[in-house]
View (tube, one colour):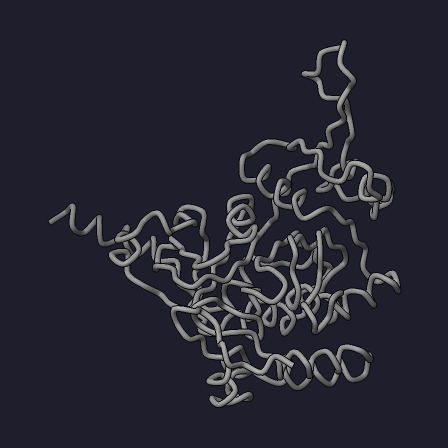
Length: 335
């Protein structure tokens, strides 16, 4: 009987389900170093992004692999001070994210760019607990020679390395051979990472269907991890095919059940990206006053992500509903 009581209490402690507002307010603070998952138009944690914007959490230092809508809206809303990224774009809707580009060109946001592979390695180094990893990626390119952050900024920001990267001779090369250069890239350990997944249980074990991008490395590199998910499922379901569970529960600090949490980006097997919304966003993002009106209507004008979905209506969501086994909406007009 005593054992059962203890087990029951442990189960309650392990239940990490919470609301979006609680998760964001608890872990995302002004000036935090954060990382967001997803890739261009896929699985951006948009519900969390909109919550950060509504709460006007600013001065953020953001790390991303190759993000799109999420990074663009955070920057457009004035939440971001600096970003380290390989690529920011929304496919044909914005080969380079619009608000992102405007902010960088005007100097409102500092940027340091790496290759896609380098960003993956930086998150992997963070996950491994090592200070850097070597690569030959970017040798012979401007990524090596042109740095986005000044030395003064690096020295002031104690969370940053004093160097963007280091190029050195391979220390294991025999002297008689021609020396081969390697690039050392610094590890990333964000204060908090936010990813959106298809399924998670109450404790935080999470399953990503389809391509994982750099989400797994980002999740494991972070000090705190918020997982938003389409479905909360039982441990029994996840245990049937444990090899498909990429995020273990002990990495997770908060689980938020948020259907359509990646909208307007896609979530494989559940829904496609919304070309109607993204086309409207593309037009609004071109001009400052139009973008402010967009934010007032679609972000500040609703209480939460469900409010945005209600504003758009069921027909819009039905339009992008995924058909299985394809995992996307084959008949969707993407123009």
